[in-house]
Length: 238
Length: 387
Image 1 (cartoon, rainbow over the protein chains, first blue to last red):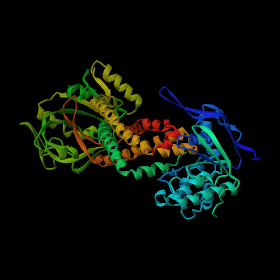
Image 2 (cartoon, each protein chain N blue to C red):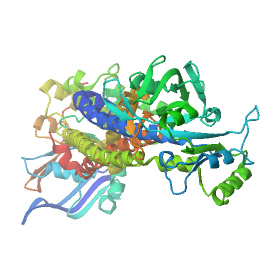
Image 3 (cartoon, rainbow over the protein chains, first blue to last red):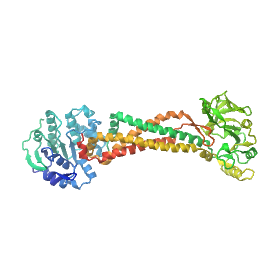
Image 4 (cartoon, rainbow over the protein chains, first blue to last red):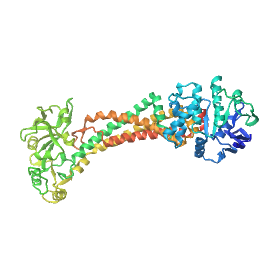
């Protein structure tokens, strides 16, 4: 890989407790993701890929081991600190877009900026830029219900990048989309990775989607079973 | 902070639930306004009846003018005491008054006690803003009387030109309608002092003497003289104190009102809580999303508490607005001392408004607290999984 390490997981385990049972989800995992890498996480249901994504995004905490993202050991942060850290460093893209239905596209994109000290004018400039990048100029005042699934996901991507975060995490970003629209969304993610040098971690079940990433990790029963670096990944359509 | 439009638009989207909750809280606030508007009206009428330099002279131990009679010879001497204020014409601002409580017939044929006050010329000056608004003032010795607008509306024969008959010996012809700044005098029928004495056969006694001191020093000396000098040995009660003591029905109304308001508020809190629990439940994934984006637990708490407050404030405002037209309404109650009919004008005053605001805040805060805490306690990952 050669580049500086962006995400480091050292002997990470994650367990859940149900009644008297301990359920291991991730087992003694070591992982290193380079800065600007586009990583796809694959594996069967229950393999721990979403849990791994949540740990990297600061949504969940490891039971054992260290999760270090951009030189920050997430285990050392309090809940309030990790919430603030997420706002500053992570952009989220969800399978079902998770837009706020009562807010317009522009207002949805502006949401993370309300946690910054930017002026209203500056926020609007940033929102316009983000919407332009995802190709949604002219849709600022549309509510989510007035947009197609692909457009909703573009709004969600604009919301994820509007604060110019260090890391983008995407949980099945094309899971609810048809093949053509999914292709467009993956083009966009590739663009963000290549042109804007965003580090992206994406969970997917779709092997074709994974081919767009620069590296694919396969998990099974909480363990890393395969690590493939795509030398000649599928190029973006554009 | 989560933008306010998020809450406002959610309330608009769920407009049926919002309207039902508003209706509930609005009715509760309206009921409280109604109850405490009556208290406000009663207290207002008694408060403005009490002039700081006025004294009401009665028999010692009496708590009410209707039971406070004493000899008219003493009353005559009281009017000559130094220190009594004088009007522009140089007449002392002091009046002997006599009260009778006959039974009057209401417009619907029912009967109630009513205060007939025999007054002297100075009596008018001793009431706040006394004015004849229709007809003319009564002339002494002619068996005439004047009434307030509320009394005129309420009692049979109490209209100008009508005749108020109180048994075989007591009757008065109504010649005018007066107002007295909304004071308690507006619950009474005023006749000439001598006419009332003659009609009731109570010569040689008065119910009370009303007088106004020229200034604070004179006020103290007058009280000393009236209460201390052997020739009087009477009670000189400051008018504000007297009317404060008369407001026992207000205390009862206030107590009952407070109890009812608390119970209604608790009921409405459950309605608000129910609405907000439903809001949290249907927006769980939105809460998870906002938490993932970096909004803190405090942001979520403020957001949902704020929405609950807005919801209840809308209902509260509707309740207060609906109560405003009641300001023109006059109601009849009984004086607990004399059992005479007392007219009180409903007044959406400071007590009613404070209670309305207090109830709205209580409903919004306490009704919204549990749902907001539930929203705060949601685990981000679990919330994001909600469909």
